[in-house]
Structures are given as structure tokens and as C-alpha cells.
Image 1 (spheres, rainbow, N blue to C red):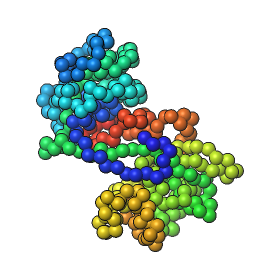
Image 2 (image 1 turned 90 degrees about the vertical axis):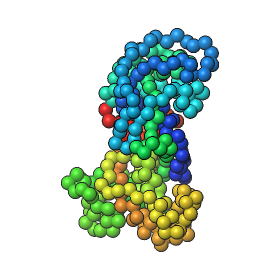
Image 3 (image 1 turned 180 degrees about the vertical axis):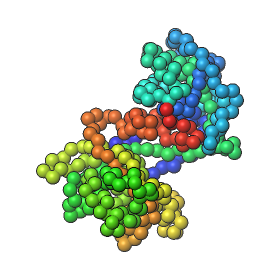
Length: 332
């Protein structure tokens, strides 16, 4: 997770879904992992194992587990790419954070985690293997290839009040949002007097660039180096609060479909360069995405702590991953 960059590059990384099982496990996403010890031969020997107290043996569903958008196929730890080389002690902070709000299937594991003393990778790896089970996550048609997307927390410069250059607002949820679904579209909020009246007074801060605001809306959170009316500056976090109920549509995809950019050019730097060449079409492009995200402002007492994810606990750099809830449930 990048806490400093204000020049994001959207990345889509192909990966084997065999690896997603560990990512779900490390995040405690509520995938209903149930434990069983795996054969020690599935882990490459590195050094003499450190003694670990035996974990209570749990039961788990036999065979393939069906989900609305995926199926889980039982696999061995040795099939998990990179498992023998991973620094698994780094998994523990993510697990402990998730145990603040554990899903039902994780209650026993979280209770065990509170009493475990795991001082090195060997001990941690053995405990995880004794406590969890690996599944290969496939599509319903048996495809084991998927898409892994990266998340980062952008940092933007903003002001509390509009200035000559900072005219792009970030809004808190309108007072009547719950009573009108779907709500006004992005185009309506930026052009219709009635829609503009609904968000008047809900401004949290103002940015220079509409694309920077869109980046924050896509990521769902970010940090603002915020200039107050008295000229002082402070760092705050803005977090996702709600949206207007319309589907998200990619402006990069629209530019590709219009023949304006090649797929290899549709990164954020490429999109920004296109808008510099076509300033009169910026609004047209932005309005292709009808979704508008609303934020809430949060204090930032500890800059090392990441934003909260769907589970309601802070994300862990290098360990948190986005999942489809219909493939890997996150609800407790």
C-alpha cells in the first residue's frame, strides 16, 4: 500500500487462484476455513521445527465447497505457490486485526491465536498448517485463473474552502440520500440545480483535479494534506461513507471503446495525459461513470495504520487483498 503517491497507476495482475486461499486465510475474511493438520512432508524442511502446542482438531466440509461465484477444491499446502518461502510471521498482525471482528468460522482459531507464542516462521508455519486448510478457488466452470488488483491509499493536497484553483468538492453523504435510491447521478450532481442544492454544505474539502477526486472515489479512501481557513495544514483521512446507488463504469474502458486510447495506455498517467490533450472532453469522460462516492473525515493519529476494509478493521500492507464476497464471504 502506498501512502504517499498522488500519481496512481491502476494495475491488474493475473494470478493463479490457488494462491488466493492463503490470502483469504491471512485476512480472516470469513471464508469458513476449518482446521485439520496437514502432513509435515508438504512443507520443505528449513530447520529443526520449533515445538508448538497442538491445536484442537476441528471438522470441515468434505469435498468441494460451492459458493455463488466460485467453488473451493481441497488442496495441499505444498500446492500453495511460495508457501515454503513466505515470511509467515508477518501474517500474524493481519490475523490479530481481523480477530477483532471474527466471522463465525474463525472464533476458535482467534481464541487459539490469543494464547499462542509463535516466535519464528517455522513455528508460525506449522501452527497455520495445523489450524487451517487450503482450498484452490476456481470459477464455477473450473477456471483456476483470476485477477488480482492492487490497493493503495493516495495522498492529495486539498483545502477546506474553495480557491481559485481548487474547485472540485469531496462530499459527505447528503441528508436525503437514504430516501432517494438511486440518487442523483454524477452528471446530475454536477449540472442540475436541484441536485446541487442537495449536496450544498456537505463539502469536506476541495481538490484541484477532477481525476484526483475520481481516484479517491475508486480507492474508497485517501489522505488529505488539508489547508484550513487560517492557513494551517494538517493530515486527515477521508474514508468511504456511501455512494449514490449507480453502477461504477470505468473511464479508462470508455476511452478504449471510443478508440481514444489503447489498452496499454489506459493507466492513470495515460488518462491524465489524454485529458491534457482534450480538456473540452474532460466532463464528457467523467460523466461516463454515473457513480458518486461520498466520504467521511477521520483523524489520523497514527500514520502507520492503514484504512479500514470491508471487515471494519485496518488493512495490512502487503497482506490485505480484495475478494468477491460471493466467492469468499467477508461477513461475520
